[in-house]
Image 1 (cartoon, one colour):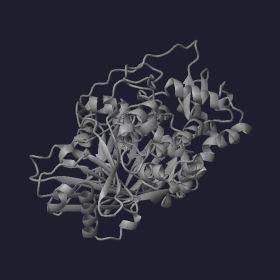
Image 2 (cartoon, rainbow, N blue to C red):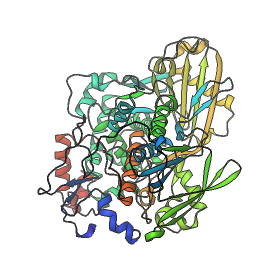
Image 3 (cartoon, rainbow, N blue to C red):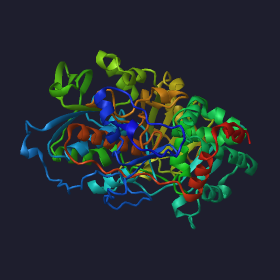
Image 4 (cartoon, rainbow, N blue to C red):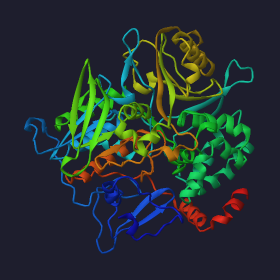
Length: 605
């Protein structure tokens, strides 16, 4: 029981939260990966489990990371990837249902399918399960995905997945351009560019490396004086996860308020920080939690010199990653069923009657699926639909609070031009072009489509796009073309030969100010019901914000929680993200030593 574990708390005042049924409370310490003789230490917003010296350590697999991965307490057996489907279903096997595809759902399904004694079935509403990465078609039959997704430098678990599947779906790390409207409003000015930091030598301490290597790359809108105004904000980077109370104070604050309080200049905010967050968390800073903003910027930009390096999928994610992943899951005996809309969930978690009954609409019929445990790997909007129709779930605080969370509207577009033309950068971020975040990508260059298409293919996405949803597809494509021509004038004479627009209402998580209190943890009041996805909280891993890595990690953790509950299988090994570099760790330790009454004084200073 957590309350009786010996603890040394690196952040005074921060405590583990215990809630839910007796069964859930009883297993809470194990689900956090804690043994009764372990010490719990919480540093900088992360749970660190320090094994008792008398137990010894267990050897995890070697990984290219500064930390060792989470490992199961039992030695991990080598898992054969040969098919289990031919073995048939064993009535004594435990049945687990995963609701929702995408990276979180597929992570859980894959690991569970690898376990003897477990039958796993994934249910998804899409005819071809793939979550938000499902491909769509233009009027002429060309493929368009639900948004272009980047894969950042610190994605070790996604990288390991690709190694296991023996696929190489990614480009090299590529540069990006940040653009703003010109003074006349007709053209565009390059504000800065993001280089490939991992190619810069020597490798320097984080923050220093990013500052020095980008100094020659800031052009029009941002002077050195503007960039220097960002330095006082680094205090927030060090301070925000000092303890639980401090974290929740930052969560209640907007990112705009935080930057203003730190004295960040208007230019640095408008032309760099605001557009970065608009495409990183899909909302303007005034409508984003300062705490989640800090988590995102640490993960994507500040953890190391190379943290901001990004690469892209060489083709549709459904084709390059999900297709071989689905094949692997089915080879292992897992079942994946699309076109299945879950409508109601009923849970029994008492003794011999423990189980979950799921009602779903499959085509024109209603079917019932019974399982020993269930994992919800859905978006917030998907969870809201199920909770609204499942009174038993709605009576539980963690599910009822999901109804208070918000989601963000997005638009994905693709334009096919008649000529092969270059863009200055393969990836482009647009500031003050639209009422929302905007990007465009040279898909021809990133996905090597020169042989498949006679001209140039550009993908362009809009985030926080509620104001654009009422517009016609023709109007949206016209806006995309104007933006491209403003930044890359070579496209002014190019003609559009095909285009596509896909609108997504309530598509992704909105980390609004104060949302932390409504976000659920991965375990619930029911001992056999678990959650996965980027919106769950208190995940002891450094992958934060809207990221495939975070979704994949939460899927693996949900699978581990299921196996623990069912007392079967081997725990998945989760590779941690990079640790704080020594100078950052030192500053955080010094900050933690400052008594809370002096925090306000330090902040003002």
